[in-house]
Image (cartoon, rainbow, N blue to C red; front, side, top):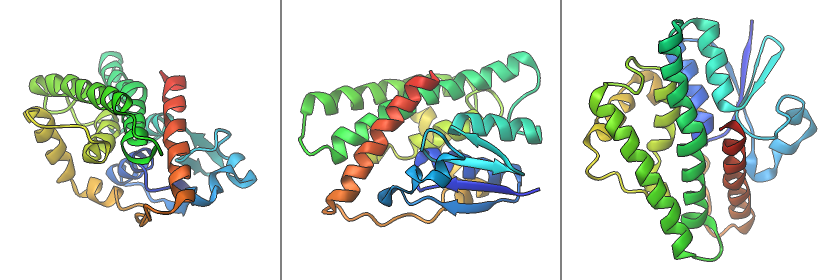
Length: 230
């Protein structure tokens, strides 16, 4: 049985490679070149109709949308997702929090803070402030629990892969001690360290207009995807 991960160096992509590493699953990696539109190729669309990374093929069975992939892998292995209804629900709640909140808001913060050709202070402030508010929700939960749903789970992986990029979004993480404790604890996990190196990072050239436009499109589509998943 062969698992192939189709991915790129994005928070959503890292969610799946970290999970695969944590679960100890063997997998092959197929890097998708977003800057050249490979995600729109007929070959990739046959696997992922939405034309977004990541996607996964497990012995011929294709799965797309990062949250759905995490659930699929957790159910396949019996790891990082409780089987009891209440425990499972807690993990799913915090996974959906990332899919509908953290990811879309940070994606928009990235667009307006980093890539949008016109600086719009109100838009930048709106998404950075909402990102900060969502971080305080995580911090409050983590004041009561070591991890978001009690034990370490796919919910922690999903949220961490985005929160770790807060500086890139310009979102302040100061005075959130529980969030920072949790962030550091996951960063120290060997599987997480390996997972965020899959695939290798792309060296972006800020003056390359084609790459910037591609990133804006990608981040904007993260928002649309997150809204559909909410």
